[in-house]
Length: 150
Image (cartoon, rainbow, N blue to C red; front, side):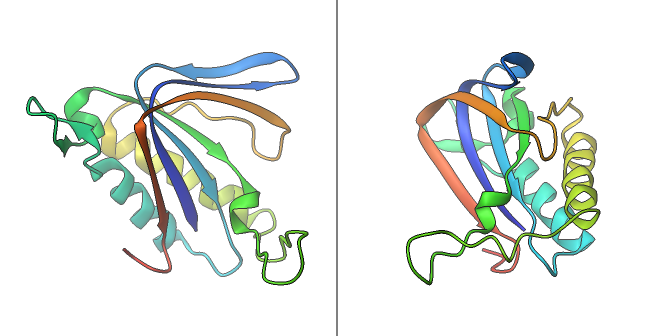
């Protein structure tokens, strides 16, 4: 699994012109599930996300996690994170996991993130054509791949 975390002042997701979910300050997370990913990947990523210290303390140092700042989290599925551009200029999504694995692991990630942070984690709609808006704060953008464990 691969995720992209962006520290935001606000973020929202709309589907067909209708607002689905919105948050204030916190994190907007994009989640991509690949073939071969397991529940262990989803659980590890959720724990990493919940503990990631990307928010400023009183000295302006990124030293606080989402719980410490009372931030919100918006989680969006995004199969394009699995893209391979190795051959040519048209991305290949052959590594993207199919349903039900992709849906199950995405939902497990969100459920575990809710449990670990004690906060609601609004989502988009899996597989939908979504419009995502955000104001990146910093900017701070972190990419984490469960296969690399870094």
